[in-house]
Image (cartoon, rainbow, N blue to C red):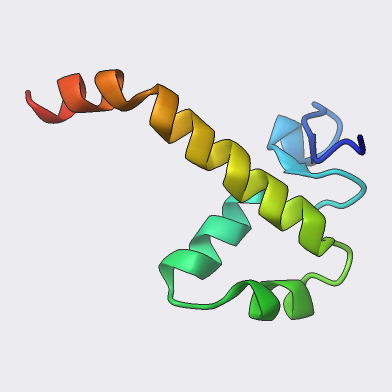
Length: 77
């Protein structure tokens, strides 16, 4: 399987980026939060591959699912 995310202190100070690029993962979430779609993101960041975006979203979904108890406890405060 290809590496999806790269974290390297030499690239943007260790900010998580899409592997093979200098595009921060956060940029994807900023686009989605602003109402943009995946295609717009891919058009603006040509080095990022669609499978990388879909993989990051899938990992994020799993993190939310497995962290639901922790998220619930924090929201109840």
